[in-house]
Image (cartoon, rainbow, N blue to C red; front, side):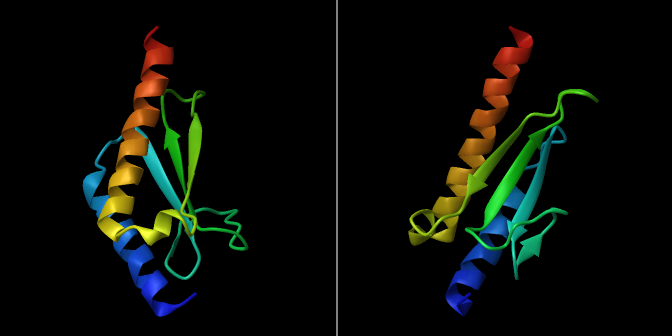
Length: 100
């Protein structure tokens, strides 16, 4: 991974961590060389973020956000905004299903 891409990914992780303070959403990263918080991180493909919404002890829906080359053409702030929007959208979808 080149240095510019690594720096952009580090900035994205920092921006997402600063923007998301929601105790119901766990955010795990599989970004080899930058941030890896998943036990079974597959570093062979695009880096990705796994969201887990802790609804209850037994209900934990997940969503994966891939940080592919197309997405990474945007600035770190734009990517972080897209990730944050995806998190909010994911939470809204689960809430609408859980709440009826």
